[in-house]
Length: 175
Image 1: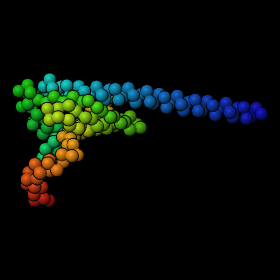
Image 2: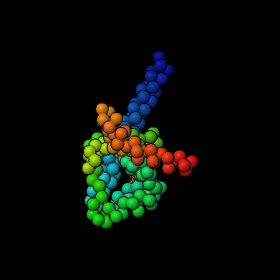
Image 3: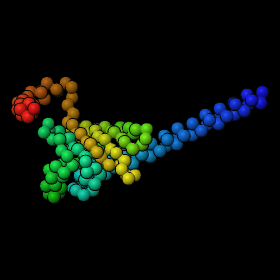
Image 4: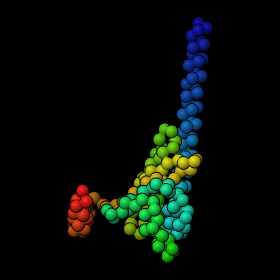
């Protein structure tokens, strides 16, 4: 009887410890998600306020920005060169997240997200990856996409057809 009671007590302690660790991890991930939300919200805000240094400090030096045009696949330095004139003129872009989902890996050093944005182009979708370096979350990869209602896709295809054909031919010639 004593062995059974001791085993039962040990089992209860182990279950309690596991639950506490799971709760602690959930709380920690919730705090990390809040931090990531702040990083992304401030990143968008810094573009709207044309704060070039703060905007690019939110990104890693190896980051990539994929724009809405098929040709826009920018390494960080290229994206800086492209963006600088907009920031200097005081008119970059103003994107506001209206919905965001954030996911974090089990080690807590890698996150990915998707968001719907209110922009001058209407609703856009952003998605990306952040990594945690030196206890700071930094944007490693960002993709901006224009959303198209399903019932309007045929019209969009018609509008894009000629330019897509030219761009595809250029790509095929490179390969």
